[in-house]
Image (cartoon, rainbow, N blue to C red; front, top):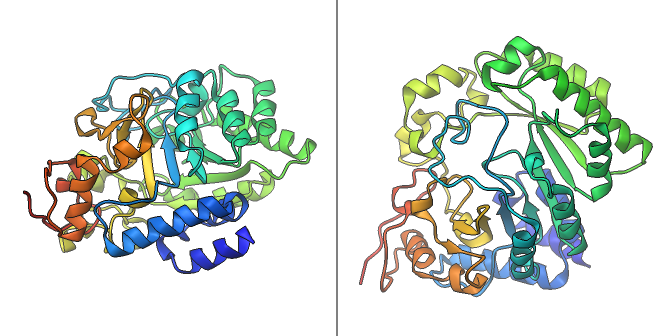
Length: 362
């Protein structure tokens, strides 16, 4: 029944179905009460409600904003995070989990760091799985400190989807962007993980090879397809690199990395410059999702990395208190054009990603 309801819902929510991963997880984890919450969230978004009765159903919970690589377009990589660095403890995670459990269909366990640097990552996955929630995250898979046995634990943990960020098939090309990384180490870890998965006869984690298509590596796309087939990777995803939120209009930076291939220029400033925004739709983060940082701070979406733009703290407040506080109401008012009392300026006032409007302030 839940699967049928999920199919019906997804057929009416185009922007949610863009990734087959979310579709699959929704069908597998979408219990009736959670699907009802999802429907309410989508209705609220369609009506551009300022105050919503639903709760977010997808959560990004950053398990640590440290990384062992120094990628030039990542705020963590170029030391521009402007947020205290921390690792999310298992105790703090369980506190967050207890608050989101009734509503969460999927929890994404990374944002501004490498999740495998968190010593509690496997217990965190297991706890989420035990709560009946899908677990996914992205990793550079540079695990020199962990070893082969750890990868077996990852397979056995119940992780649903693992995205491996691997943007080159040779060391010279790979380290151009993934600075500090060893491509041979990544391939070794990928082979070991896939071998454990095969030996254990596990369907999960679904392993996706994500390749950011850039000027220096686009010639290796054919090689990626060949190698991924040989290794038995479940999915390959060629996608556009994104620019940091504070540099979305930096043409010089974009031209250094972003290819001339129109298929992979999604985040080039020229798109924003043409319309004044990137996506010609209402922001969905303010209705569907919540981003929680390692110390519990809540960001309106996964693109925001400044602590000054936080909307609250989930370790200190209840979910419902934050979800309809002045920050969220003020941000949703930018979409609805409805007046809101006690409005405050938020990062959404300067967001060029979605189509926002001005709202009256009283």
